[in-house]
Length: 353
Image 1 (cartoon, rainbow, N blue to C red):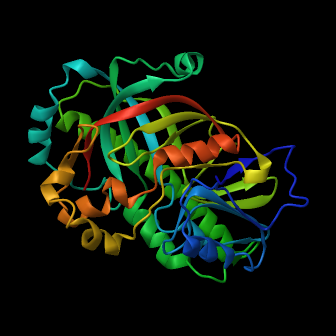
Image 2: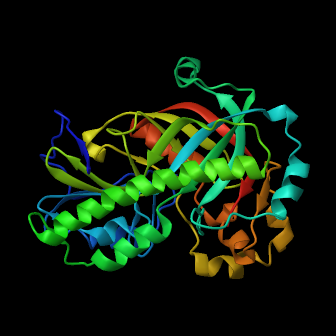
Image 3: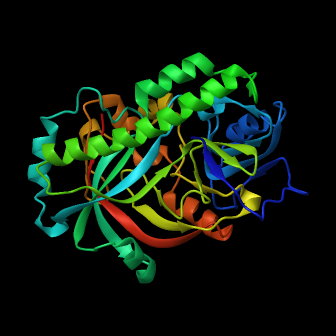
């Protein structure tokens, strides 16, 4: 059923209808802020928070929108249930022959019912870079010697079909048949997205010949509807600190990702960023970056990790420079007291569509 949370400290009295979490150091796109502000007059909208990774898309990405009486499938988008899951493998990082693995993966693919998807979705073989809070790391059962699998994907075609059926700027009013029907389909898509990630973990570890029982360390979703004290929180690129005690905030393919403990804060609508947020539109990436990088140069990052993608344009679209700095996003979340850092993950191999 719909994610339902209750919090006694919910209080939006005196809360600005649109709040943007930023500081002087963090780059923030003016058009993304205006896009978010344009939603404030939708029927039933009470408050909006733009997270540090806020950027433009078909709908604003990196935000939480709180409504009463109405829900807006358009604001959730087509990849309902999209999230990031961290799996533990049984392999030691020092024993993985990365270059041999890359050659193997370059000649294989994932086909059929389960898929990673395009854009910023990925499967990443990664390891612990640094532990900041050993006690919390111990609670999660983190082993600094082991390799981990990080998977970012969602409900794919399932979510797309629901989006096409229900997306409308007019929204769906509580009590209507279409409202109830959308909630039912939404919940199915969230479950399918989680199942998709779990199957991808099994497929990838077998394909890469990596020993793993794929124990889940953290599973956090960021595209979905959550009910909090009778209100509807539309989360688009937004992790709930009520539903998720721990979260993964993904870096770019050339930077570390963060394992964090979330800190529920009502002023920020109990929200945490899901990643860096785009800085350059996809349609502009190749034009801006191809004079700086040859395509093959983007297959190796500044961290020494490898990026595997059969989609040539995607290498430019997903270049590190196309995104905000993850450290600026994390610093902003720390400033707003929304997270506590547990550890960082350093990529070894990133496998895309």
